[in-house]
Image (cartoon, rainbow, N blue to C red):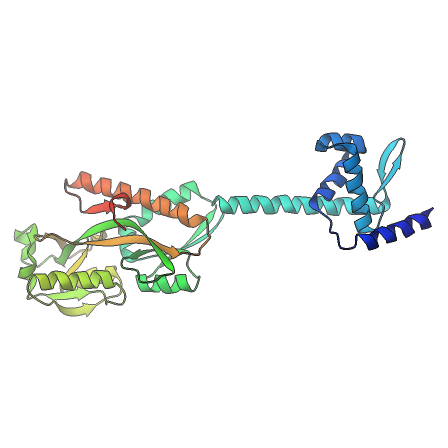
Length: 337
C-alpha cells in the first residue's frame, strides 16, 4: 500500500514538477488542520468541498508527501503534515507582516525621509511644517540636513536626499520644484548705521557707497542676481566686501559691520544683536522658496511632507498679515509656478 502511494506520488511529482506551492494552498491546509474536517474547512473558507479537496491533492503532489490521513472519523495530520504545519503557519504570518509593512510605508505611517533645507527655511516654514508632519506621521524618521540649494541638487541626484527646501531657480530637468513661499527682500544693516535712527524705509540709491555682504552666485543664483539687478536699477554696482555660504553668516558679518545685505524678510526672526532691518522704498522683488525632489522618486512621505509645508506656509503668511497690513510673503496657493 505504502509502495503504491510512493509510486503514485512520484509520478504525480513528475507530471506537476513545474508547479509551485501557492499561498492559497497553505491557507487551505491550515484551515483543514485547524478544523479537522474538509467540510468545516470549506465552510470557513466559503468554498465547496470538492475544489478544496483538489487543491489539497495538488499540494500533496507538489510536496511529494501525504499531509492528511482521511477516515470516517475525520482528518488527522500525518507526521509530515505535523512538521509542515508550523512552517506553513510561519510563512503566512510573515506574509501578513510584510503586507502590513507595505501598507504602512505607502500611508507614510513608517519609513524615513531625508530632508535638506536652506538656512532661511528654518526661520519661516520649516519648524511648523516639521511639527505638522510629525503629528500626522509619527512613525516616519525625518533626517535633517542643512544644505545650500546647489548641494541639495547634488544630493538629490545621488539619491542621498528625498526632498529639499530650496531657492528658485532650479536648473535640473530631473528635479521638480513645488512653490511653497514667496518673500520680499529687506535691508539688513548694522544697528550703528545712521539710517536706522531716522528711517523706516531706505532708498537703494543711498546705498551706493556701502559695502555689501552676499552669498556666492553658485550657491544662490536667484538671490545673487536679484541683489545685483536691484542695485543696478538704482544706478550702481554693489561693492562686495565679503561672501558667505549661509544666511546666518551673512547676518553675523552685517552685525560685525562688514557691510549691508539684502536678505529675505524671514531672517528678521534671527534677532541678531547689532543688526537692524529696513524695508526698501522701491518695490521689492521676491525670492521663491519651494520643495525639490526627484521626478522619479516613489517615497510616499514626500507628498505628505509637501502638504505640511503648504499648510505651514499659509499659516506663516496669515501671521505676517496680522503683524502688518501689507504682508510681504505669499503662500504656495498664491505663487505662480
